[in-house]
Structure formats: structure tokens, C-alpha cells
Amino acid sequence: MKKLKSTILLLTVFTVTAFSQSGFYDFKVNTLEGDQFNFSTLKGKKVMIVNTASKCGNTPQYKALEALYEKFQDQLVIIGFPANNFGSQEPGSDKEIRQFCSDNYGVTFPMMSKISVKGDDMAPIYKWLTSKEFNGVRDSEVTWNFQKYLIDENGKLVDVIPPKEKPDSDKVIAWISE
Image (cartoon, rainbow, N blue to C red):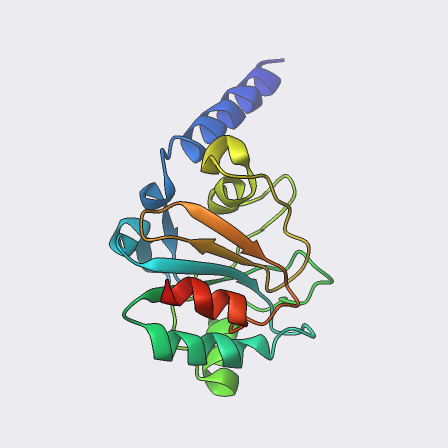
């Protein structure tokens, strides 16, 4: 019984900690290299967050993501979150993911440590992205690899782009250019 109470207490502490962020800029995550990335550094920029995978039919989107990042770096930051939630299409370690992204697509936009984007072990940033209770805008569900979340210069969620829609679609380019 003591073990059950301890487990419940730990889960409660984790839940409170996970949701103590008051907004987008309060999150801190680790990069593929293990360095801390503080979302507060993104203030004033538009942000696209995308869950990625190395062995997916959508993986070639890395090329368009990198081109978009290079073209709009002054206005847009793209942040990739590798995830193995769909079809085990991201089985690699952080080091292997970095190597794959660099060797095959020349990725220079920030890539974070592999996380879960759905389920019981969903990362706190994705709980924020997918829950109106936390983001204040809308509920959503991550449906597959390469789903994109658009965040404005003030840290507000503005749109969710489906996995199959290209990162450089007319809709996304219009949003960046607003």
C-alpha cells in the first residue's frame, strides 16, 4: 500500500511539474546533442514544431523543412521532435537520428531529443500543443509523423498542418509572410 501511495504521489508531482508551464515560452527540452533548449529564446519569431521520423513515407519532407528554414531563418524557427509513435518509424538513438538528418538532408534547424507525441508518455510540449486546456486555442491529436504546429511570434498556437501537407505549402508560406 505504501508503494502505491508513493507511486501516486510521484505521478501527481510529475503531472503538476509537466503542466506548471504557463505558456509556450516556459518549456525547456533537450537537443539531440543533450544540450538544453529554452523556448524563451524563440520570443518574437514564428515557430513550426514538427514530429519527425527517419523511416516514414513523409521523411523526404526534411528537405522542404530545411529549405524553408534556410529561406526564412530571420522570421521562422523550425523545431524537429523525433518520435517513434507511428509504425516504429524512428527506432534510432539521438546520435543515429542526428547522423541520418545531417547525412541525408543537411538538417541545420534545431532537432530535439526523441520523445513521445501521444499516449501515456506524451512529452509535456505535446500535451500543451494538443490540449486547448493548456494552449488556449484548440484540441488536436497527432495523427502521424510530420504533423506541423504553427506558433506565432507571441507564443500562441495558430494552426495545425496535417502530416501529408508539405511544410512549404502556400498556406504555410502565406502565414510566414504575414
